[in-house]
Image 1 (cartoon, rainbow, N blue to C red):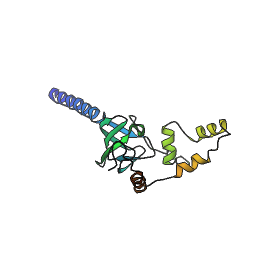
Image 2: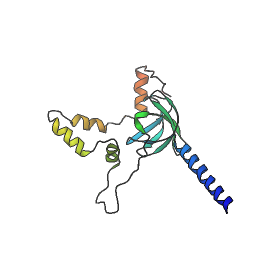
Image 3: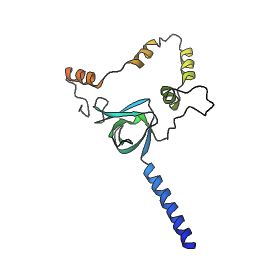
Image 4: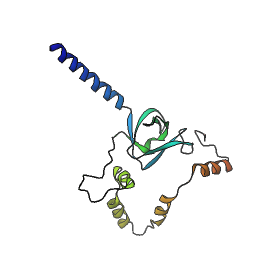
Length: 162
């Protein structure tokens, strides 16, 4: 009986130590949409997407860029500003919640920005035309268009476009 307790205690200690060690290199994505890239550059080719709350394993860091691996075993580079060491939990509240938050609202709230903060900021800056900000948020540029633009301008960004 005494041997069983010792083995059980040793097993528990081993399990806790291995869990703590394996999760130490984990980070959460804190932006609505992010991209894993081939090289540490915003202009590098996209390997695959990541979404708010996704957990990624950190492999190495180079300047402001972190090489990570997602749960699908895709690895790529992402800017450190898109990551947090905190574990992000997605949820719209309990079963009695009358409405759910959008993924954009959840991402902004995770960074401390929400509709109330925006309303307050707009109220304090009534002379600013925010319609251009709203329009910019809807613009999406494809990887192909970006690569064409870079090729036409003979731009060779740091990290290279692959």
